[in-house]
Length: 636
Image (cartoon, rainbow, N blue to C red; front, top):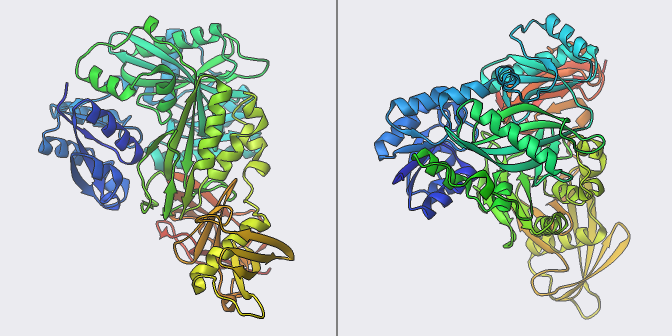
């Protein structure tokens, strides 16, 4: 076994690898960018080496610096985590040529599965079913449009080197094909350095079910399936294992297909074979098709660990050190049910746009597994994936595990950045999801209900006003002999303003007037009926069935906002990739104005109304901050 390994990653996966390595008596070396100098993974590792500036291209994607750091610190092996260089065969060769061990599959195996078109051809040869589509090398737009017509709409355009939903577009008909093709190719080029795409038939009631495999280069086993059908923008949100409605016949067929795929490339280490499954009419052995193989540890691996009792990172280290597979297929079994929810810093009502900010407050339940790379006080930077944590629970059956997930999400508190926490809470209680009736379109169908901004009730507003009043003017104590103390507080919630009048009847009793509704509050211990706290710059968050954050408004400053219909602001920090208009152009509502790249995803900024471009404030290559003015419109 190794005595020291270097972890070529950051955040929660680096912390998770450190945890297992420490339990195995293996020392760890962390690497970090300038943005991560004080990060949790840096603090937890035995040693840490600076790579460079914040952009990943100057730090976490610098394979030469990572290999040199391993050599300088005496590490014997490199664990890539996931993302960054984890599926880069050139990096694997850099590692092995330096005399180090790569904790993962060979460069040859990664190349075999790294391009979706080549992987599908390999799977056809191995007898694994694949989705109908075009997987060839011809990338001419007109040719691809003809192929899409042959396949039959709707179709999926997918980057051949893609993953995580990047470079993927759903096309409903021929009129949208050209625009979606150009967008997918541009996003694929930016994210992977390869603009090539493939075209596949879109299954109308699809389920995304994947199988965890593990090989030692000679033999391979599967550790059963995970259902990852709950997705937004082709990215997973809540995963579970085993898949609801799974039959013994389908599990055997999918498991055997996944093992066949792994053995076909002499796979060593942890990997995931992803399948698209037709969910219409129930699961059946002839209704699944190979999509791709991820030649690395997956983000959602904790649910597999929960139901099998296997530490997949420990297996990775043992196999990389030359040991055989720790268990045979007949020794593996399923124990209960598990869920994992991904908690992100993102603006759900705005379309799941990634967010940034300082985590002023962060609390997790003690009875759930929490995989996180941040703590209270950490910054969510614009340079990397905005994940805050993964919340994983396990129970003896699906119903019990789901109740535990709901309770764990209810007990989680975050303040300082907008998050998807309320969305996760609603999703975990969705009637179809609770019943196990899932497919990849579930979130899109319920978007209006699941993704709406929270609407606080009068009591939440009143509690926020009380906390704001304490901060603004000191404790609410002391009142005259002839009347109670009255205080007026103004709170902002996005574009909504709440005016509250507080009457202090005593040190532990307050009456609040919220838009004519009378709310009586009594203090119980440290709160007034719900958890609330002041944080950041004049902000108050109230935690309950939903989390609502209010700004404390200076009444004299109201009325100074610019009309939102006349300007287009950057919704998040990002890089301007494309400017589609220039000053003087006439545009119609919905017209494409600017393409902004953030977190390696493209976001199209469109005209909020008909008008004339009066001012263009951005150029390709500009790095912009959230709220920066991008375009100003004038009436036609």
